[in-house]
Length: 260
Image (cartoon, rainbow, N blue to C red):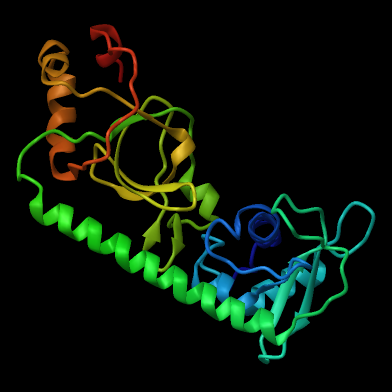
């Protein structure tokens, strides 16, 4: 049996370290994660909420955090047990999340544990209400009509490379899309963490960064004047109809629409 590629393992560890660092320093609170004043968050919550967007085992996080050091040779992360018998983790670098100071002593109180539980309950209730709104809209939506969330990829995005796996899967059966700049993409739904679930014109589906999505106007008159390329695009867009209105953009010319 061939030995595992050490460079591939190193690349995955690097991606995991960056993803963990991003959640703990920048995006975690926005995505529903509770933080202590010292910047600690419960490790199990990070895994349960799938905030790392990688199919990762808990033991991988322990391995990465113990090996990750900054340019000065200091540990990037700190893991500390809480009174709930759970491990809590923080980044020791400066945070952009207001009210957090990573230089405070490593302390997790009973109040922090209760606040973390309450935060999870609020998040679960919010997700349930949002899903009810989506379900209600889907039932009331007419069967025909053009999608209002069709656009183009504004940058290349290598979903396989981002996921670090040959299948391009983020976790479980949740893949990322691989798109080239200018390629048409249909935004099916938007998440709360800067990502959208999208479909390309070949029918492949997966996660795609919101920042890389440029919505297009899809008026019937534009479609009729733009040739067969737009007709194919229209057929692919029909199953993904949505109520989300696109941002206003300049009309697409015939020359632009005919580009591959």
